[in-house]
Image 1 (cartoon, one colour):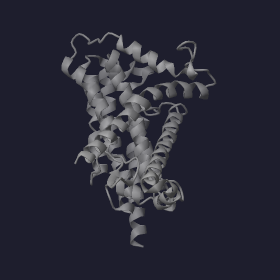
Image 2: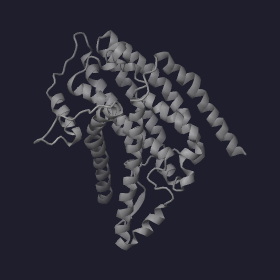
Image 3: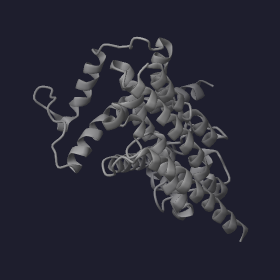
Image 4: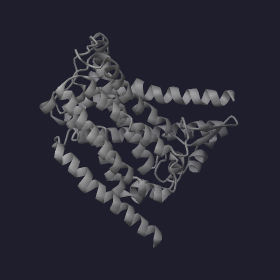
Length: 356
């Protein structure tokens, strides 16, 4: 009982630390630096400590200090309760949904079975869709409660876009569920131990459609019409400042991490190395003893998982700084007239293959 409690606390602290302590601040720097590199600029490089700039990484610390000293402004006529609650509603789902994403397999350490996922739910995928959909309310309430016309337009755009792409996104992974026969993410990860059973080979169209829907659901460019600066100032969070503004911003960045984790788990072998099974990994580290082999294999699997996650973060950032913003009608047309029919065709073809 005590060992289980320690294991749970350790996993929560690790994932919370990785997301809030590492990815959230670093992605702010990545957003600036990668765009600068792609646009032939230098990017953030001024903030320093004792003359050391560390390629601009200290800008994240400077931003945090600046945000903490910003005034928390609520417009006249705004609904104070919902104006305050909206950023929390946007941020919390981005953090909580990572609880069911496995970042490693099962290992036996000192007689104790360790499963590297915070909550190994039988309906893990349903949990992700159910909880992540709550973020829609954060954008809608933020826009409506601000008593600002531009914010309201942004909130309406966000609600239509996010609800539309949730429908399409749910259909894009039906093919994956048909192939692996489970909603449990740990089981889907285990079944991809064989490199040629990775989801990208079993469902290539499903991968492209899911990633497109996930980026649109996160309201990132080229799907950032709910916050189109050139049209509606900053959209649904125009009237936000200080920590509340940062919570919207952080929720967006953490969703990038969550999307990368889901894509890795469903389509790219989860924590597995190509052509190397878990048993082969344990055998390779047998020189360290049974417990040492398990620890080393666990570290390799965790590193493999997060390297894949970082790759998909880079991919999303590249897409964000490569493609121009779509018009609003184009965003909705892509969902209902292209992705939705293609996802249904993908389900039909997958069913035919199984019946063959």
